[in-house]
Length: 498
Image (cartoon, rainbow, N blue to C red; front, side, top):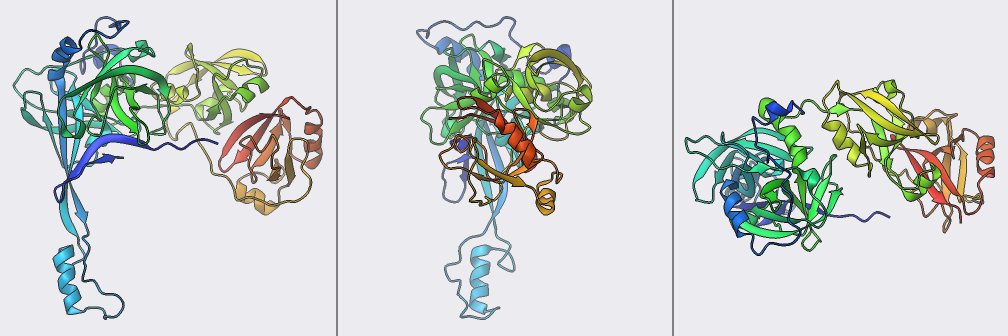
């Protein structure tokens, strides 16, 4: 059972009527990229322990951190306390009068326009006035203004934005020489390192907080390329888009989200991800060049790892390969385990989509793949992204069957022609899981009634005879691996027979 978390993007919103605060929910050559931002010359090695004071660091970087204020026109329908029920007929003059008074417009149905004000943060990345922030801070804004620590304000315009990664760039124009930050290397950040956040929480401009990196590579459901730095430096609504600094004063992340139910749990986009996007955002206004493999992948659980002969649950398991995709042309197959991407080891399956997306279309990459216990290197030429590489499906309606379950805790039967058509499979491919036995090993896994069982331990289950043959070799205490079709996804599930 996966716990559900509420992720809150940390911009802050107010309405002019009754003020309140609420949480809101590329790749180009290195030389060209550095025209748009400045990188630290060295690694900026963090200090081993907390300094006596963060004051020197804050004095150095705070002038380049800005508060972002946005205005958006929204239409609201006010409540008419004199609205009558069905007792009065349509076109009642009193009702029409109060509709126009409370709702606005000539007919009383247009609503009243209000200005919605949002608060966020950002930071200057070069002397030309480019400011990095979150997409959700500026999305849909009719007017954007930024304010520096000296209280000088400037109008800003959106240069580029990317919803999938929640990264955006705005620009201001001024004759004044602007301070800017140095972008560091988020790959060098380690768990336990000290970090400093600067931002505009609840409109309290240039608030500074500090803490340590609690975890890396967090997936919190905010988008398809989740790879967050988790820290305990306090961030709140209004911190969105602000910088996360290491103790050398280099930006290592963009503060983005908090867990609604969490106490002091904040998340930042690694700055290395943003650095890859900046050139495309500046030049094209959006990300138009994302690499595409064409795979459905899933995490490697401990049970699945053992079933594939792996000691650790690392890598990305290929659940399916999209027809005509670069992966299919390269020979990637269902059941392959991708261990490395261009010599980078994949500790989690969630790392793969971001790596692929940050590689340009047409580039040839190398995948280290485990297939039937043997490792091999497979070159793949990436295509242009069409769909996300990771898919998930909903469970089918439960099918009730009362016959006795088998050794692995399942009741299965052949698919009817109608069922096969509705499930998107061929009639002679797979067996329908009609019931999962309560308190069985299968029930403790992710197997669901309504799934179509395609394989057991690599053996096809296209008929009752094949199914019985496949489960004959399953022994108590062994791990069984099933391949199932669920909605439009094909996934592996493994569990231990008790």
